[in-house]
Image 1 (spheres, rainbow, N blue to C red):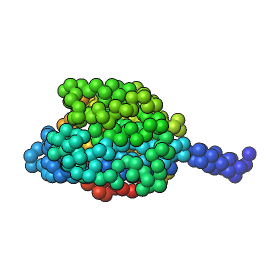
Image 2: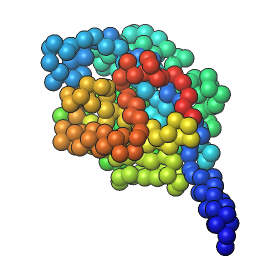
Image 3: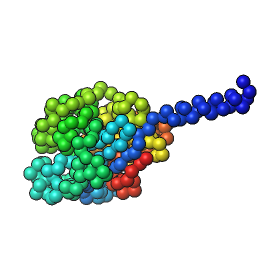
Image 4: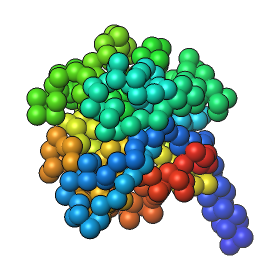
Length: 289
């Protein structure tokens, strides 16, 4: 074969390989209202006093438009806490309402966010839940026909939390968020999982914040690889070495933070954190393609 023929064949192989590369189509970062303002040390007590500041933080939710189906990653605060402290205190523990100060309106709830983006809740194929805290699993019951993806340990955690993490409901775990979801269709995981079998959406086991916390890695054609940490990493201060103050295991939490940091550095990925107000202000409420 002539050199020109070999070169053309190689180009053809490269074209085939690139055309078969798997990517999610697009990804939207939204929020279930905001929490705050409050002293950051209420969440990160290890932070030195000279680094204290008042923060207002997002309650991150994600909408992923994939060729194989529409995905929601976390469903935010329950609709019942919308539109004021009085409503919040009827559903959450009053102390949570007083500290977190949720600003959520009805328009911030995941079903309304989907409608704003041109979708509807009944068209969601997969709901991935990072963990079973009140600001992440709050509206799971809006998706009775979806496939729900959680770590199996986290299902146990949600319905029977460790006592030291607060078994009284409502607390960080709100039984009413999940009590009508027991018979939903659950994909119960025990570690990492390739969601669509093509490498474009990876569920990453990142325990520590809770026993079965999970994050997500998404490959996009233009934006590249995005790691959605959710509560594996709340905010920049956690990346700087100050651990979150609410953890099932500090050791597992630290291992998970390090795992995502090395993944970022080795793969050239971006990390999007669940509750970083500065990052959401700069990069939130927009599509990534």
